[in-house]
Every structure is written in C-alpha cells, then in structure tokens.
Image (cartoon, rainbow, N blue to C red):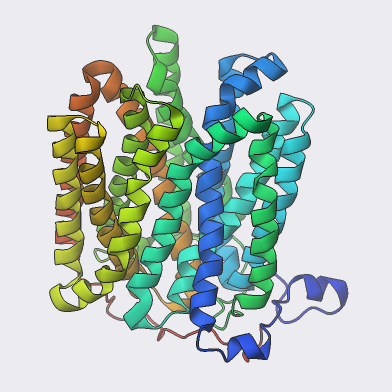
Length: 484
C-alpha cells in the first residue's frame, strides 16, 4: 500500500523536523560559499567510504571478543553493505521531495548516534543492528552527495567539484584498513567506531551552516513502497550471492548461490515491471536506461569494480605490514585528487567521451604494468599513480555527464542510482578479484581487471551525448531564499 506524503508545509514540531535550516547570510553571500558546501559534502563521502572498509580489519578481534564464528562476524561488514546499496536509491527519491540538505543532516545525525551504539555494543547482535543504522545514515549522505554538488556548483566547475568528492571517497576507502589497523593497536575494535563520532558531529554542524537549502523539489507524490519492497531483497540477494560465491567450494554453498541468483533475477523482473507501471516510481527507468545514462552507469560500476579489486588484491600480494601497504595504496587517492581538477578542462576541449574512455584505457595500462612488474614500490607507486589519474579523470567526468542528463528535480534519485551502482561495483570487485586471485594469483587478477577497465572504456565511448532531448526542466541552482 502506498502512503501519500502530506502536501504543503506542516506546522509545529513536525514542520520543524521537515524544514531545512538556512545558511547564515554571511556564508550565503561569501565568494567561498560553493567551496564550503562541496567540502561539507566531501566529509560525508569520506565517512561513508571509510566506514565501508575500516571494519574489515577488525573482524578477527570481533570474533575473539564475542566468541562467534567467522560467518557471523562477517555480517558486521555485510549488513552495512547490503543496507547501504538496497536503500540508497529510495533515500535519493525522498531527498528530491523533502530536501537534500534535510536528508544529509539526518544522515550525519543517524550515523553519529549509531557509531556511539556500535562502540558500546555488548554483543554481536546489537553491533549488527547499529551497523544497519550506520548504513542508513551513510546512505542518506551518499544518496545526496552527487546531487548536492550538481545543483549547487556552476556547470563550468562541476567536474572539478565531483572530482574532489570522488577523491574524498577514494581516500576514505584506502585509508580504512590503515586507520583500522592503527586504532586496533592503540585501543581495540571499539575505537574503530569511537573515531567516527567527531567527524560525524563536525559534518552535522558544518551541514547546518554551509549547505544550501533545496530549491528544485520534486512533487510530494506517494512514495513507491512496493518498489522499495522489491528492490531491497533483489539487491540483497545479489550481494549475498557474491559473498557466498566468493568462498564456495562445495555443493551446499554453490546451491545457495544458485538460489540467491534466482531470487535476484525474479526480484529484478518484478521490480522493472513495478517501476514501469507505477504512477510515481522510485526509479525513473526510462531516464536511467537512456543511452546517455545507462552505459555511463555501467561504466561507473566497472570502474569501482577495478578500484575495489585493487584494494583487496594488493594487500593480499604484499608481505609488508599494514602501514606500508596503506602508504602504497594512498597513491590512489593522491593521484585522483591531482587529476580531478584537470578533468573539467579536458572535457571542455576534448569532449566527455574522449576523456572518459581514454581515462579507463589509462587505468587498464596501469593494471598491465602491475601484472608485468608486481606490486612492489618501484612498480606499484607509478602504476597506482597512473590508475589513480585515470580514475580521477573518469569518475567526475562520467558522473557529471550523468547528472547533466537529469532534470534538477530528479537529481537525488539519479545520485542515489549512481551510488547504488558504485556499491554493486564494490561488491563485484571484492568477489571477482577474490575468485581470480584464488584461481590464478596476482598476475591473472590484474589482467582480468585490465580487461574489465577496457570494457568500461568501450561503454564510455559508445554512450550518447549527455543531453536528453525533451528531458524536461531547466537546471535550477539551489538558493537559500527559496522556500523549503
């Protein structure tokens, strides 16, 4: 049953909870207002990705502390990933209706409170519940990250701003294992969660002060609860199949994988049918599947598959300690941050197809160098720098092209879908690289990832121009003077 949102403004406490606070006039009128807003978004992007990777290194300590099996302990990570990917598109849709700043603030608040609960968790069950709550908060942040930037930044600076956001995500991903290892050494696994709290509080305060209110709202139509009820088990089945299949070596787990694949396929068919017929769908399928958007979403998925495959494989192939590996992997976000500001200029001069496809070819070249020379610092640093530069050029250019094809009122939905495909790419990267590494070792894994990067280059080269004929409304920038 669909429940309609109450139109118009609400009074009293309920109205205050659904009202976006305005920025102070001094900040709104500052020449740095846009930079400050992008920086606040980057904090949320960094937190969400840091939390996705930092906990994995603490699983052994969690098992010992709680006396549970490895399978149960892995749900501390898996519950986060499943919740994040399954809810992010729906939260993007809600943000379009109620305000992207509003959902971002609630995201910071929920993430921080859940981090306190996780740090104090007396048992594995409570910890998993808190991880689900953390994921919901992170989904609120990530569902709005690209949309907030796309509706706030001037078009000529959009690619650079998205590059900064992409660098923050990559930095969070690569810093996670290193930071987790240091925190485990200093104070145990609970400090992994205590460390999130200052950043969450800072993000909330900065969000109130620095983020602009939403101007381009989508109509408050009935929310597509049926679509969400179909999407969540479908995405969950995909991620669980990847998780089980990663270590399946016998008939039982393989049969479970087959069952999960069937559930995912059936759920996917029913979800597409639902969204195609719903009066107010959660995901606008014609828009998402358009030839200017769909191939770019697929290419983005492959780019994150490659990134996460690297983050998993290189530590497995190294005999160095966690700090040395973390420093080596830090080459990636540094290179992404260096390359991202250049992406906008290159797109203007060469076009988005040339930049995105060429960038993924660079990624494939770096992977080829790793396959030929190994992951030691002499080869690893320049190879990872080349890969990071390629991803730094690709991600903001690709995301910018997607958002340019989407009306402002649907930017939250599109941002949620962009981040959902990133989550799927993350899960695929972990499972595909783990299987490849177990079957053929480091060289085979790097060659496979290089082939996948070339597939992303082909998708990027064949995508249509990022302007949807008749897609609707002019892009409107957000403004604090507009009513929330």
